[in-house]
Every structure is written in C-alpha cells, then in structure tokens.
Length: 494
Image 1: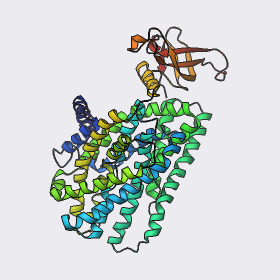
Image 2: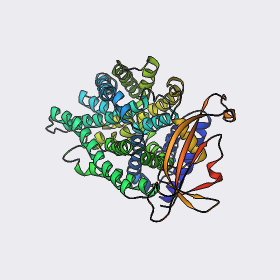
Image 3: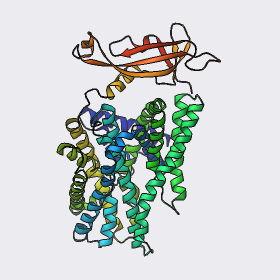
C-alpha cells in the first residue's frame, strides 16, 4: 500500500501541474490520473488500497468540509439560507422526474428502476464543488452576494435529500414496507440532527481551546479527529436513524468561527496545508473507482439520459434563484456549479446491482458515465465562468490572506522567536488595516490606492505572566514593509 500512496502522490501532482499549465482545473487532472492508475486501466494501485479507498475519500472530504465550515459567517448564511434550501431539493426533484420519463424507452428499464437511477444521478458532488467554492472565497470572488456559501450549503443538503430518496426507492424495489411520508420526514430530521451533532462538539472544542493554551497543530488534529468520529457516529446509528454528519462537520467549524474567530482562522490555516495531501487522495481515488469499460456500455442512450436530466436540473436551479439579488450571469454560474457528479455516484452506483435490481448493471454503467462526463465538464465550467462572472470586492478580504501567505505571518495564539535576541513571544492580537503609502507602486498599484496590511501585537512569553501583562510590542506588515522573516521565525512545536 505504501507504493500505491507514492503513485497517488507523484501521478496526482504531475497531472495537477500539467492541467493547470493548460488552464484547466488541477482536480480534473487528478481525476483522470486516478482513472489511469485504477484497477480498470493500468492497475497501479494495490487491492489493499482500493479496499480502504472509501475511508480515505471520506477523511479527505471531511477535511474540505471543515475548511468550508471555518469560512461560513452567520450573516452570509442568513442571506442565502432560503435559496440554499430550495436549491437543495427542487433541481434534484426535476432531474429525477426527467430521468423517470426518458430512461424507460431509452434504456429499457421499468419506471421504478428509472427512479432509482434518477436518484443516483441527481446528487451533486461536494468533492468537486466545495474545493472550488473555497478557492473563490479565498480570492474574494462572489463573496459580496454570498454565492460560494450558497453553493456550499445547497450541495451538502442536496446529497442528504437524494440519498434518502434513493434509500426509499431501493427499499420499494426490494418489496420492503416503506412509508414514503415517514421517510421524507426523515430528511429535515437528519439535517437537524447533523447540525446538533456538530454544534455540541464544536462548543466543547471551543471551551477546551479557550481554557488550554494548546499549540495550533494540536488544535487542528483534535478538530479533525472529532469530525472523523462524527462521521463514524453516523454509521453506527444508521440502522435506526439518519444523521447528516457532513453538515455536522461544517457546523463544528461554523461554531468556532462564530465564537472565536482568531482560533478558527488559525485552525483553518493548518487545515489548508493538510488539504494539499487530502486533495490528492480524494480525487485520485474517486477517479480510480471509475470503470471506463462499464461506462462504455451505457453508450449513446445513457449519455442522452444524463443530458436530459441535466437540462431539467439546470432549469430547476435557475428557477430556485428567482427572487435573489443574483443577476442572470451569476445564476448561470450557479447552474453550471450544480452540474458535477462524482462522489455519491461512485459510492452508491453499484448498490442496485448488489441488491438484485434487474437493470442494476445498466444503472451502474450510467452512474459511472455521469462521472466521466460531468465532473470534468462542471469543474472546467465553474473555473471558466467564476473568473469572468463573479464580482470582486473593492477591498476584498482575500488580499489580507495574500499578505499572510506571502509573508508567512503567524495567527493569534502562535509563538514566534526573535532571531536577534533569542526570546520567545506570543501573538495576542491581530488587526487587518488598509494603509495609504506613497511607495505603493512597489506592489504594482497606484500610489493613492490603499494597501492591505496586518498589525500584530506581540507579548513576551515569560513564566508566571498572563497574556497582555508584561512586555508587549506591535508591528505592521504589508508587501511594502520590512519582511516578517527578517526578525522572527514561527515556532511550530506541538
């Protein structure tokens, strides 16, 4: 399995680099790298790796959903809440109905089998959508109207709704006595339980972080471990009740951000580094699940079913956004962002075949084909339209992130060492400010334009003293000020 990890890292990074070089999303390259390395093409990944790939993919998805949670501000959620709820149900319903109409004559399946297929196809892929939305949020794209947050929330609830519908339909095919109203009632209950299941550990972790002065790496690992436990809890209680654990994962980050923003930013910064490896695992292993030979069997008829479903899904997405402040171009962007399919289709596409559904092989073939068609197409469309359609803020928050990353600035709670004196200090306060500098042209801007800067307050870390008492010092850093590394180095001990 160690060799398989090496293949994932080297092949995934190479594909990411090559696709970015030609202006395509790197994740598309990773998906295709996974297809090539998987057991259905070159067979470079060991059987042991394929057996545990589901766990690895879930952990990687948890990492990016945690990052999403640490970016969800209450005011933005309040603005997009209604639209997100409509988008999480209406487009999926239209897509399922469209597949029920066109699949029986095209694929020679029953209406119930067509409905099962539709419920598999109707799930949008958070694995594709969430990383791209996080990237737009980092760049300040579309944040004024909360578009990335809208798509984050809607895509997560969409999966909960679709999976419950799929479970109901598969049970009906097996002759089980399924109460449709009760099952549909489980959807809001599952979402509510997921939120509660995330809020409770979120508050507990917040209290622990406020009480104990743990180093940032340890905080991040504790949050990640808690989120993984939450996903495990969903599996444990699944025989009795559905809990939307992925929404709970985002709730953990949301609560910490809401109550202690400096701590949240610190954890998010570390998660961003973890995501570099998690991203490789997620997309390469999703690609490795794709059997192109099975997808080929779906043929032209399967392609038509997928395209018709997407047309109706797109109509539903656009209608869901009526009454929102989004202009028509931004609505079209949301339509495209709701196209990609990958994770859910890879996870449940084979279940009808295993359950003895007569057309199970056809359903699996169309599900696999939907990944090959929509994941690259959707990711490319999101990147292309996002850069051209989504607005930029006049003074976007992402400019401060650029300063932090380029200067490797620490966050509140981190410790630094003075290179000249050898003393240890702790960051106890930070402020994001815009300053006017006559030499702003050094960073390629007009001299009158404001420049983003970060002011840090340092406290001399001495035994027996509380933060804020004793010796403190404040320094300002921007792209036109002396470098942070000239005087300080961050201490990353756990």
